[in-house]
Amino acid sequence: MTLFSIELSINDKLYQRDPQRTELGRKILKHSILLLDELGLEHFNFRKLAERIGSAEASIYRYFENKHLLLLYLFNWYWEWMRFHIDMKAMNIRCPKEKLRMMISCIVDTARRNARIEFIDEDVLHRIVVAEGAKAYHNKGVDAQNEEGLFHAYKSLCNRIASVILENNPDFPYPRALASSLLEMANKHIYFAEHLPLLTEASNEGNVLQQVERFLVFFAWRLIFPHEGILE
Amino acid sequence: MTLFSIELSINDKLYQRDPQRTELGRKILKHSILLLDELGLEHFNFRKLAERIGSAEASIYRYFENKHLLLLYLFNWYWEWMRFHIDMKAMNIRCPKEKLRMMISCIVDTARRNARIEFIDEDVLHRIVVAEGAKAYHNKGVDAQNEEGLFHAYKSLCNRIASVILENNPDFPYPRALASSLLEMANKHIYFAEHLPLLTEASNEGNVLQQVERFLVFFAWRLIFPHEGILE
DNA sequence: TCATACGTGATAGCAAAACTATCATTTTTT
DNA sequence: AAAAAATGATAGTTTTGCTATCACGTATGA
Image 1 (cartoon, chains in turn green, blue, yellow, orange):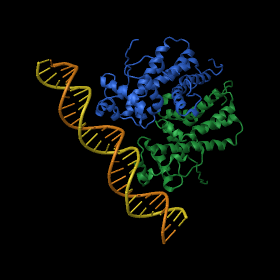
Image 2 (cartoon, helix red, strand yellow):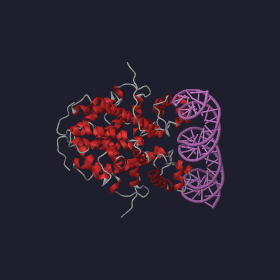
Image 3 (cartoon, rainbow over the protein chains, first blue to last red):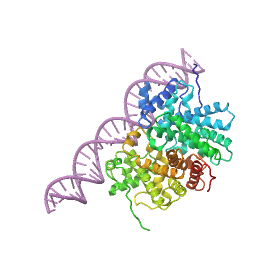
Image 4 (cartoon, each protein chain N blue to C red):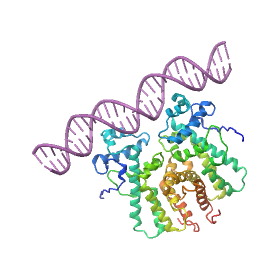
């Protein structure tokens, strides 16, 4: 078992000082994930984080302007990581249908199957994306942030998925909308299964991720291949 | 043109004092909607609201425990309003397919076609639901709030939609998941069209609502009637 | 009609959150 | 070894979220 480290390239407008390059920076990433998971975004703050890692509030502000940008940094990391993954796997797959199925599997849970990065706990990050993901862009600053390219990774991921949809059916009229919907629905239904189970058929008993994956494949297949039966 | 007033019944755990019953209460509802739309949830607070309506911060706390519960109150109002609507219209429709189409039209924009309530600006409320809707349940308090029935209106709306889906195709395996997805996607894509247009085909030029509606009908039809062509 | 309760507005205040500034010390770079 | 950069410690500011108190007016109902 070899540890290897990857440095994903993240838009440098997200941080003041690159957190991947220093000890303290990596500590901030690692423990912000754990603490966000524990407290939720609204109760999480830099004071508590500083205390947790035995540093000072001001030191954390030297890395991130505020907690929203830190959150956005983590999401960007997640999106880049998913894309990296999808691209890796796509290299060994020729069949477009199989490629699409693989992508859906990655969308539902990139974390599930993979290499560990020393300072990022992927499982926990996945929980945060599921729980708080929508807050990335639901605020008054979206347009300015989008302008600065802070959603580039997400859009580019979405685009990748859309192009595989078109590979499968060049006449499909809503490839980007379907791609973003798959990304969003995956998280919604994982969240619903746990907290508002009446809103989905994926049940909390049994393997939620597997059920959500099955359900997304069903959706995607019916939409993209309208004249075929569902093949499981 | 007659004004008429409707009092929707809202779960009484949402408020301390019923805002629909007093002058000040209705002012709070009216101006919280306007101010939320202006500032967004994170910059909105009771101090600013009190100032806006020429009242005192403490007076507003007598109606709502905090801004999150006020937001939930408004969402509940919206959900009840949409259901009221759907039920009204459904009475005159026998054909299940037509009923489904009507529902999608209501989902995309209940506000568009309707009666005005004196103290609720429905258009603006719709914008708030689109922009902040996901925050209703994305927080650490969901489970407790759900326990208290604060999402009953949403679940019940979802259920109504699911039952019409089943009327159209009794074998459809994911009626509730599709229903919640339609509700969520409607808002997502309206929001995307305005702020992150690469994530959807609905374009900001032209009538966004109409495009989103078309797109949801396309989705729903392909999923529910897999062996038919799309009839527009 | 008088007493009482109630809703409101005004003011005050507190604890926490969201930053910013300063400076001495340590670490890294050259 | 000197210069530059990063950290930790402390302190301070403004805003938010929320509670307490009190005086005033109005509706209630005995």
